Image 1 (cartoon, rainbow over the protein chains, first blue to last red):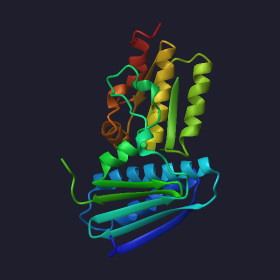
Image 2 (image 1 turned 90 degrees about the horizontal axis):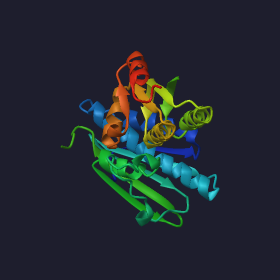
Image 3 (image 1 turned 60 degrees about the vertical axis):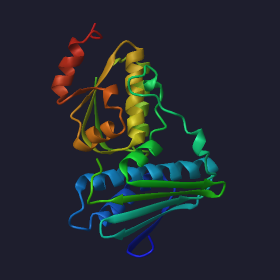
Image 4 (image 1 turned 90 degrees about the vertical axis):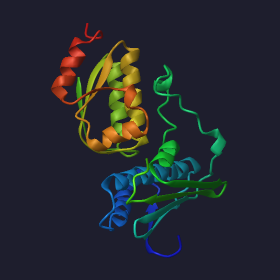
Length: 146
Length: 106
């Protein structure tokens, strides 16, 4: 999305700043009067997951670079991008979490973040490489998909 | 044992609960009621610590009951398809009764 109202944040890659990003982006996304509260909640979680991954990526890489978060709104169409400068990851290397019915499910405390992002917003794109990762989240805050 | 959680269960909030969970298990506590009534936000980091807590209780022949879940917590557990992993109660008192009566009560 190139036009629209834009909010840009550069935050330290520290967990204490994740809540700040959530608050700012949720407020920006909720400006349209017909935005749905449940969709704003979905976006809050998806953004939290993306920024959490960015913070952990910077921690793993030992870099003190900031995480860049950009939110563009056009009416109820919201696009959020989260960019980190971490080492990237192999999308095929994400552990497959067993179903809740599986006896092994309680062994997995991690691995839910990216699947959750994909479930909660309308579109999720992830570009990752050795110079960092860009996560793009797109959501229509007026519509709840079936 | 009742643990009341206040605030956000995200990357910044989970270390305290994880540490408490591990310490309780080390001290032999295997029946835990987790009061989530004051949790304002949870994401997958928070879900992970809840999973770890229940796993430790079950491993010690006990149980963990989640009580007073807020709407956001309840909806996210469902969205993450992990709601079936937990024993849930609407109130802390009911959770305490439940945990006192179950097969793990002795």
